[in-house]
Structure formats: C-alpha cells, structure tokens
Length: 355
Image (cartoon, rainbow, N blue to C red; front, side, top):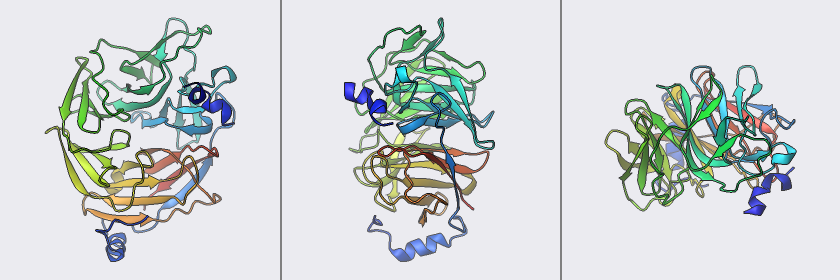
C-alpha cells in the first residue's frame, strides 16, 4: 500500500474473426459513419502543481457539467502539492475546452467545517441533471488517514455529491454500500428513473439519490466488466465484456444485460480500452491507448444505428507516440477528449472531432 500511495512521488489487433477487412471498408464508407478520419489536436497539460492535474496520471474520472460545459476531474493518481503526493488526489479541477483554461474547484485540503472524499481513485463520477450536482460513488478509495494538516473532515466509503455552483461536497443519509463483488468503478445517472447505475461483473448496483437506497439487479453471464468505462445511450448503458470480447448493453428500464455483438477489435485487458458516446454521430468511440508503456494506439467506431465497426487512424500533429488512459466526450464542441498516461508521463491532452 505504501508503494502505491507514493506512486506520484516516484513518477516526476487484430480484427475479430467475425469481421472481414471487406466489412470494415464498407463500414468506413457508410453514410451513417464519419466520412473522414477525423481531426486531431494536441494541447499541453498543466506543468505547475496546483493549477490542474500534472505529471503521470491514471484512474481519474472525467464528467461534463451540461450547464457550464466544463469538464470536472475527480480523484485518481497524479502529482499534487509536495506534502500531498499520495495517490487518490483529493483536489478537484475543471477545464474549459473552448478557452483551454483550468480552474481549481476544491482544494486538496478542505477548509475547516467542510468535508471531502478521502483519496478517491477509481470511483463512479456522473452528473445529476435533476439536482445539478455531480455524484461520486465509491469504487476504490484508500482507507489510510493522513495527519490533520489543518484540513477539514474526510469521508470514506460514502456516496457524496459535489455542487459545482456552491463548490461544496455533501453527504446525504444513505444505506451502507452493497457487497463489492467486483470493484465498481464507473457510474451513469438516469433522470427518468432518478437512479445511478454501476456494474459488478454479474449485477447492476443501483443507487437512488432520493431515498439513499441501494438495490442489486443480478444479470449473470460470468462477465468481466466491472472495471470498464460505460456509456449511456437513451434507455441503455453500453459496456465491454472482456471475458468474451463482446459489446454488451444494459436495459435501464428492464434492468437486464444483453450481448450486442463481438468487439470489432481485441480490447485487451480490462481498463485497456476506454470509450464514450459521440451523440453527434450516434457512435461509440473506442480508444485503445497505452498507459504503462507505449503501444500503437487504436481508435474504433461502432455506429449504433447501422451496427457497423470502422477503424480511424491516429495521426496527432507533433506527437509521435501518443498515450492516454482517461476519456470523456464534450458535447459543446463535439469532441472526444483523451489524456493521462504513466511511464512516461503524457504531457498532452488530445482532442478528436469526427466529421
């Protein structure tokens, strides 16, 4: 645990058999898919500690506030102030894509009388469109407690909300967390049911903010999906099953999981491939980028309307060996944002706009 907590101090292929190449050529020419490779851009990440995530970075969660269109960064591992090198950064930053501006939303050390999560690393992070707050649902958090250092109170293993207008964390009355099973690491809020969905490998763990209740909905299937990104599309949540290399889909209303199709490429191990939903093209954008070491990155599209796969080239101006391990779709600019990477640290943020 000590070596992991000092992480930041120490760090300053194939196509699935069911899809032939001809199918990919046809998919790339489909009018339901982007007509070109897309436009890439690279921006430098912050270099001054305390102005944003700096240095080697992983396991940070990104979500967009649809009201102000800023991207909010929750937890994860990156370099913080010298006295706060521990993994699981407690500070919270936001980023404005249009102006390329970072802003501190909450300090690493909460003011007296306020609360904050204790070392959040891989957590659920999603925006509640009814209450206009972010929800942080425990996935993996370090249980160690630092000396007070004139900080406020830290909260461990509780569902918390963050108000981006008031810039405060809160904890509402709630039931104890359900059994972990597989670690739950991503969350999606659904306004129609006023619920937040996280996945174990064999069940949906659903939290109801209005009551503070949890409910488990088993779906079985002997899947590996608890550590993967998810994407909400209408009344479904898409996810990757790494055991069987399939794209799967959870029905929010029926509370059931079904397999959609084989993956159009090998997604690798859990957490090696991330993905988001590009609403402007009705497509899932998959990024298989190296994090611990470089390997040639892959970007794939799955168009939900046509059910077709297509691969996009990764050609980022000025960047020979791109890496990334964090991802979010920014609807205001219709761009997919990728960043993060360790060994070595990735100094860039990448933006991809499909055409």
